[in-house]
Amino acid sequence: MHIHGLIEDSATLANLCTRLAQSPFITVDTEFMRENTYWPELCLIQVADANEAAAIDPMAPGIDLTPLLELLTDNEDVLKVFHAGGQDIEIVVNLTGKTPHPVFDTQIAAMALGQGEQVGYSNLVDAWLGVSIDKGARFTDWSRRPLDKRQIDYAIADVTHLSAIFPKMLERLRKTGRGNWLDEEMERTADPANYVTDPDDAWQRIRINSRKPDVLGRLKALARWREVEARGKNLPRGRIVKDETIADLAGNPPRSQSDLTRVRGLSASWGSNDIGARLMAALAAATPMCADELPARDDRKPSLGREGSLVADLLKLLLKIRARELDVAARLLARSDDLEALAAGQRQGLSILEGWRFEQFGRDALALVEGQLAFAVRNGKLKMTRTEEKA
Image (cartoon, rainbow, N blue to C red):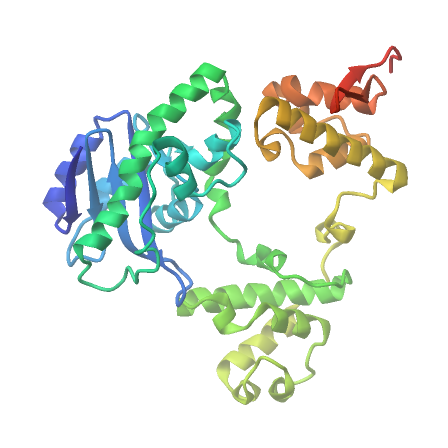
């Protein structure tokens, strides 16, 4: 494989993208900083195919990233391969408003191949290539220039290793017939809605014990206000106001701006400055949260009751057994909320009752709920056995 090193000019980048556009897949990674900003600060982009690899410096003066961004978002003929690519994809969405497509995430694929639910990149490389990664550059400040050769080599290795792993992984998926298991997960990964925070939904990130409509209405208003402030100043949310302070203000609203001087987590200046005034305006405009927006009690679906909870526990046990038998990550087969919904009597709109999930797990889960399946111990191992009783 030819390694180009660091690309810092538009012409070289455009030529690289022209060549990569002829490849069936490219591997992609980014380095960024977000400790001090709301928006991730893109510092480096690494790309590779089976023949060549390079790092691109998005901070280079005058560099035009358009050919690369168009390759990532508009070229449907080239598969974009990431590992745990959520934050990389978020950066592309911030730059273009679009997600890379089509995409393949090797962390998700590893779930279908029995390598765990969130296998790390270094473990993936070790398992597939027998290579130990040099982790010495992990904590590099990627925004500082110049980058030395060791840092650039470290960054590029992420995509060169991935370009060697991906064909092996794809072949394993074909042999096991599990490639189609991943289609839904990969499409979910490519959904732009996953990477754009609506200020009106920002309250859902904040932990609060109350379910009172007036308290939650204030929480929603304050979280929206903080989101707008953080974006406008390009500062992390917590640098504006911490979550616990937002929750405290929602539960115990100040009567006047001067009362902000006594709120833990706010400086005395908030009692008279402009940002304090905007906070108070957000509180004043808050309305009680409407009933259909209130979170479910205890963050769950409607109460299962004692018997339903026991059934859900049996379904979770079945899930463990089936995941072990298939050598697949349990979370790829089913999620807890689907199991609880099935135990509560729901039969429509559940992923475990559709497609490959129904064939591999859902059919037996339904049979268990309807009394056609039971647990048995054979040779010291827990197995499932069919009963004679019909639902």
